[in-house]
Image (cartoon, rainbow, N blue to C red; front, side, top):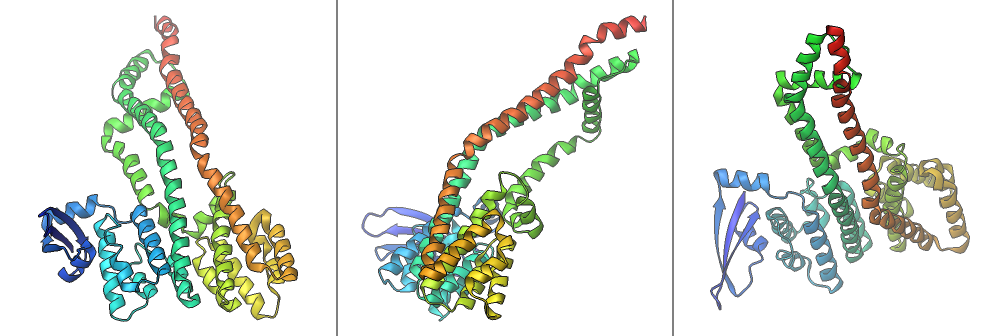
Length: 408
């Protein structure tokens, strides 16, 4: 249920309205960030207003998640009580969903629940790998570092997504215009050409024939125009779920140019988590188990699970890494060599952090070049589309004289 909280400053009389997605008025007050110098009036948002708000509002705001994690890390660093730390984040987030999450989690914490258990109830917002990391922080006593790392990771992801979105604006606009031209011609020019050449009994180029068939389909079933739009919308909306499907993850590892980024991203998360847990003196098998849970790619989940199995069977960590190095791709032998060096020098956590930092630097470099990579791909796609259109339209025009002479 969405609550509307009207806050009034008792000194200035200035009013502000805040929406909180929660179940009770008491939680709504917490989620609104009400201070001691404000009065509040809570009311329910019902019916059509609530439906519109839920349809148009952000349900999983990356910016709010970054603000929440970074804010909690700063509060924990300064030994501020946990419940108050959550209360302080209410004015940092902007969406009703996250204000409600802060209120609900703070209420559960007041009932004696752990942070991980309270946040796990919001599984649609906090993925299992995030919950596993928070549990690791609770077990190791390093929650501030965990939340800081989560905030930085989400910030990097947000930056990459923003670059992708900004880089896709120009190609998206041009592509939409191109598709619009094709659809317009399919309803106007192509049917006229089809009638003319049918009457002349003339053979058409393949590209023109394809356009004519496409035109016939659109004329008979014009609602099909909405299919690609709806399909793309569903694809972007559910991309997070799609990317977690093991079959899709395996496919990403076979795509040139993308496979390296996927491996480096998954490896950076895994090795950084393992190093963090080992530094906190968490038992090695438990650390490997938690690392497996936090790995978002199923290859790395399998890798850490199998390494744990070899450790339980009596192998050393470098030997276990070597046995399962094929899961790590082309860098597997290099990583195993570093683990052997770590075993001799006693610097396992330092080398794991070093690998993670190297991979993160490479990912940052790739993120800065995303827009440069998109431009040539867009030019090739648009050039191909324009070339096919020109050929499909003008090739029959140029042969129109021959068709008329044959008809005579």
